[in-house]
Length: 417
Image 1: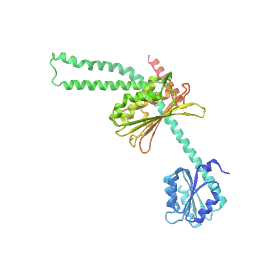
Image 2: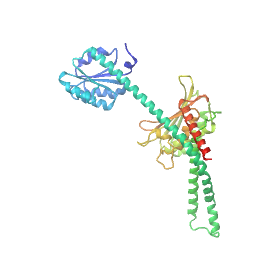
Image 3: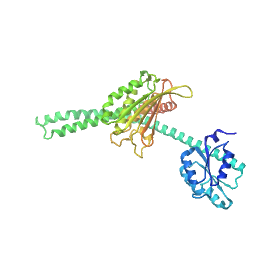
Image 4: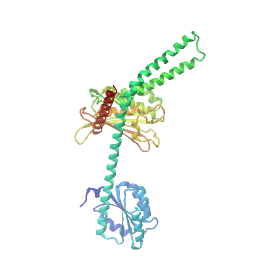
């Protein structure tokens, strides 16, 4: 009787004896998916072709060319979870024991192979592999959960900093701005109407100072938006197609100037989306700015959207942005929403924009995930529930933690007062 786990994965048997391969296939092809090879080189090519779908490698030790132990060692580097079984003659007993003790082999079997023992060993090996795969999947899921929790905590914690920065820095910047705006006029008065010798110095310095103040104020504004912890009211009905065309109209000159191609692929059955209009428009503006900032001439962007239902019948708009931009080898997708991560390696390209996008999606009851593409590029997947009363588990968890941070902030303010 076959089980789902035995059907899910394959077995590879490598042996230079053609009859042994034939008998093996006849014995087990009704229970397992079988691959065979009569030398280590062909066996390794099969491992490369099928990857993790092959659960068990059964290999003879003595073969022309590469030995069984050597094949298992290469196979372990290629696919560490692969269950490796060495088949030996009695004279290779010490080699087999050493292979097991050093972790190269899961088990060893003596020739001639006993069919019942072999069947039991293969079933145990298959179950062992299945358990390893499940364990790895759980670890990956837990890692994603932990990463999401840390990200939400970091973003919500930024709210405390943003509140303080807005409160303390904006008043100071207003004074500095007023001084810079008045400085040229006051200077002219002080020198009795005679123009300074280097007018460009004063003009350029004033412009640079004004630009830096504008940058700081914009950063504070984005931080305030990004750290906004209250769930947004979704009362505006927007066509995603019209919104993207509108946003594209704002930035079309920048895309043409940098020779960046952008295309849309939106499902025809996508309904108007109930959103917080101002924040949802801002989200797409920030995404377009992000692409213009880090892409190079000749790169392209693709934005697609379709409907999807979960197991409970809830409908989501799945919006995907894909580009082919180059990432540094040290960059990870998780860094993208870090407010002080610079994707383009430009000093003025902080990740506050993407942090704001992250928060906006979650406060709409949705979620956003990033992953790197091979060989290069970025994929952003945004999930937005069509029902404003519904939230993804990630969004609800984020919202709860964000509110806890806001409560702690207010308590701190009350104590300080």
